[in-house]
Length: 94
Ligand code: FES
Image (cartoon, rainbow, N blue to C red; front, side):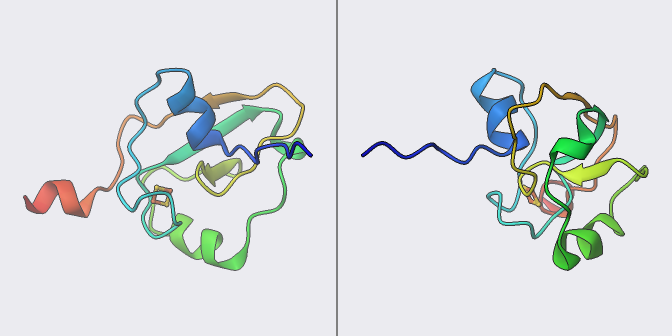
């Protein structure tokens, strides 16, 4: 039996050679993978409370912001923007 891979926005970007940061290893514990979803936002499942809490710490959050590693892609095309700045405490302290 084949199972369909659950693909999140972060993996979709990385699979397409778009180098988005993902400092926490895509476990929803940082904000470096923050994206703004311009098209297809409603096709995504709702953000959980933990994701919302992390987004509160992200730079440049908008109503259609998501942590790309937490947003599972459906069959709808998406248009996303990677904000110019992100808060990467691990990178900034090294
Ligand atoms: S990579 Fe850290 S929250 Fe997505």
